[in-house]
Image (cartoon, rainbow, N blue to C red; front, top):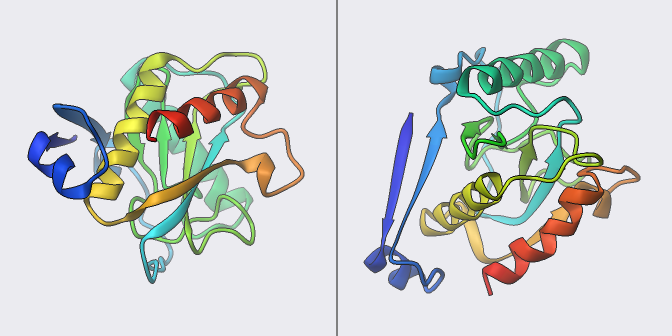
Length: 187
């Protein structure tokens, strides 16, 4: 597991976050048992957009259950959809744990025609029915702060729901309504 700490000096330098200290815990690909990607393409510049998704499978709240779901999603993406890897950059469980998908700086396969300049974050669950937890939302906020501080995400990035880019219900009505809070919390 990767623990990333952001202290006050880091956030002051970025001009981004007013918090004293934030930490984001990311379960690495090796920790959740990822298969090797068939290929990967690096992004040519920092991402300009963040696209929020939901997986439409049941919620997960324990580390073991979430890791099993991430493995299932990767297998489905690679075997059934013929992707080179899991489509998302990151996934987040209801427990607030973040799982590295393709990770920072790698082109995803989460929003057809919109992957070259975006990061795809999938909340695990079906958010037509369920409400995302504050733990999951807080983890995504910290993840995005980390992306800005590390130079993988521009500071004035745009947050979108998958439905803003395609004809889909994704990320579900209840998660889509939270996107505005994610936008306003960084301003």
